[in-house]
Length: 161
Image (cartoon, rainbow, N blue to C red):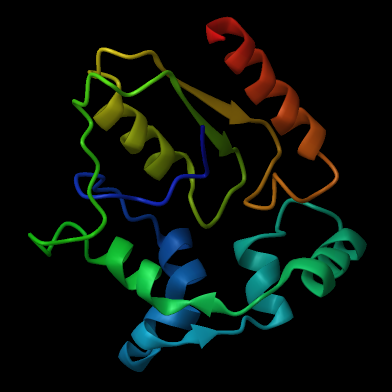
């Protein structure tokens, strides 16, 4: 499974919402080597934009942790760095079935990024599928609708187990 997959080398779209979501970290090059806490407003935009205010606040209180800078910088510059750590062997014949899951309202990893990841993977000899969950944001594995994500992925796994 790839749930809201971070972009890797070869994934070119860079939507404005993704840039805005990453700006608290990417806005300062010194953040590459440290963890950056998000404010509630930043968390709301990046993770909890598709849930009611009360749930967003509860998610922030329970799940907000400082964001490590290194992975965001690696993903942001993957297409500019020939030695990037953020590369995927999309032709690997040993790769098993892959389901890419995206939330329709995800600001951090919107459909453009998830679909570009799918397009990079779809020529692999293994099964590659993508699904967009309606009305869902980036918090789709931790918010009230997590069972829908679990059910979607379980159905996929059962087809290939």
